[in-house]
Image (cartoon, rainbow, N blue to C red; front, side, top):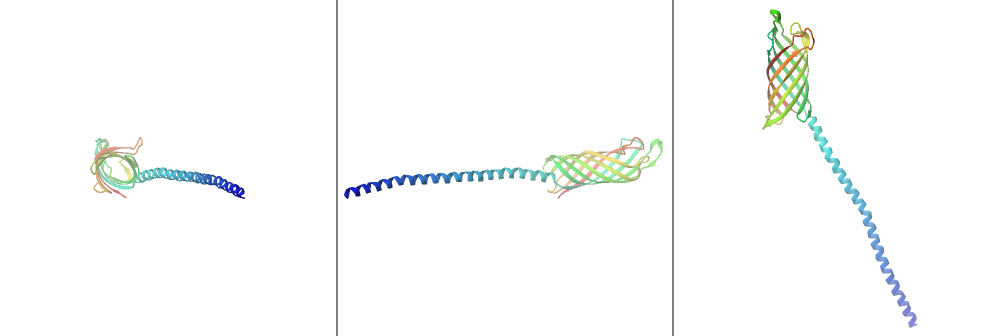
Length: 230
């Protein structure tokens, strides 16, 4: 009996020893599997976060660019031009322009608007006096190249074009429509973040673009402006 009990005890001890390593191995394998399962999820979350950040940056840049392109302002200008360069065409202009800013690309701004013109004077071709007073009205566009000068000042070169319909043929022996072109430097003082006043010295040319009945004339003068940003 003693021998049988000894054999049984040895057998039980061997079985317990064999069972212990297997259990440890199972726990190690299970932990490895859990880590492997968690790693793809962590990588996926990190990749998603990076993708979100990369999409957010271009989106912000696009919003800033769109905001710059959508910049809106109203620009009101009053001109006085004295007739020059033609001895037989003594016509002065008093103009009112209302422009709305349309788009901004870097330092270039585009505007569309309306021009009202009051022309006074005469032509004296062949020594004959011909009254050339008229009132004109029509659409206008403006292109402005602007740069900062320091402080609250900016400088620009303005170029505008207007298509005008007159109340009668203008000048005398002309037609009832014509073009007004202006170009010149402008100095602007921004006295608030939204409001500015400006002064320009400009050259103008007026004509209807045709080969006959087109007594075009030129002039120079000053333009006062007020601009408000929305």
